[in-house]
Figure: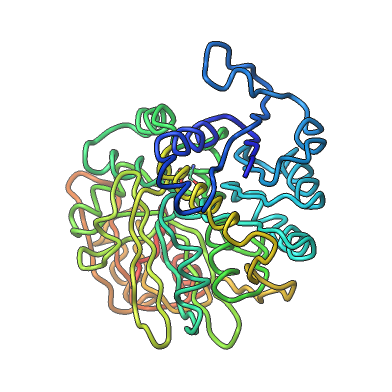
Length: 403
Ligand code: HSE
């Protein structure tokens, strides 16, 4: 198999490295060697082993009949979408780590791949090195999936862990995550929750076999989480994590991306640093959890290489994979009844009666020296919470409690 890598950044160069380091094992498992013939990138990489392989035009790949597979690790949708489409249309297998591409154009690209009898695989697009997509599609094929809840972004989990446990400032934690190769080119995609949103959309689509429009998912990132929230979390003995959530019932989904309070008994509590953790509940299996490196060069590249081998083995008879054009009905998870952590300005003494009247029984948390107080509410919908909070007035923070 002769392949091309489009995009020689962190993941693309990682794929090259994995193919070199594990050549013997990969050749044995694929049944033939996988050789990288071209690297498509805007840069030159002089003095590196790939110097002679670099091309700058897609046509160099498309016009070479020897190229049977293309790895797309460019990120973003422009020009990745056009490039991938043309590779599939000309009968090349495509393996990608690009969640933005898969979430936005997966349905169409899966259809083209099926039509051309080639593989379009994207294990690395969610959960980094964790083999979650194939697990959902193959191993859990006999399950009705009821819930997928996960820490799906390595960068934000790294930032939250360093802020909470080491007292780092947000900017220092983000800069280090960038240096370690975890963050997106534009880290807003990580910290605003968009990366997690695309990943939970992909996982839900694979599990349900229906297209999920990521734009239907209410999405909030971690930029509103402050040191003070961590002080309350420490007092309560809980952690704060950015979660992508999906609950499925009757063929419909209730979804959300938002920070959540996680209690110490929850398996997601101890998922720290760049690690991802994904809880999957099936109607027969019950709860299962998948854990591993969620970002970074070699873990992500490992998932790409696994897909490359799968594509070689499938050859011109790829098995059905992905989801159909049928669109999943997505509701906001806020319609479900959940508990909330909320901070209000003022004192407990001033607002005790208002809180009792609107929220009923709550757990109070008061930190010394603050001009505010916090409560843990009972179960309610988001609309009920907002109506009650408006009556109390002075809402400063609201974080859902994972149950
Ligand atoms: N920026 C992503 C993350 C990379 O931090 O999880 C892996 O998809």
